[in-house]
Length: 191
Image (cartoon, rainbow, N blue to C red; front, side, top):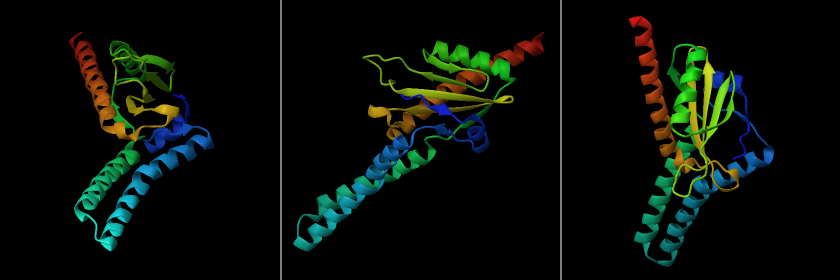
């Protein structure tokens, strides 16, 4: 993972993670996304058209086109939402940061950057883990936190195909965060 710098103010304002990365990385990301979302369905459509012209097997070609179109739509949905931040209500920035740090350490995330504005954590490499290449970003906005999880693959390309698994990781942290905040609130009111 390149662990690019994050434009925190712009990210909070637009509720999306904005990274300061190289133009080359942006071009490679665009090309990979273009291949999965446009090129594969296009070639599957060309295959249908070719089989209609030569009288070939249209069933397999149509099946292939439908599968590639469904996958392209799922990938497009994941691509649109890959950098979206989810807002969770907390208590105060200081307490939110303490709770998040505890949760990330409990879930065995390795803290990469941990400052006043945001926390960035990754998973250590493990032979038996499917979580290698995951990065979680938590931005602190007043009493709220904004959370996003992204997976990276070979050559540090974002894997939008892991979007659904990343939402599960986010949900685990959000649920634990809300439970910890609730316990702290109850503890304050009981004293």
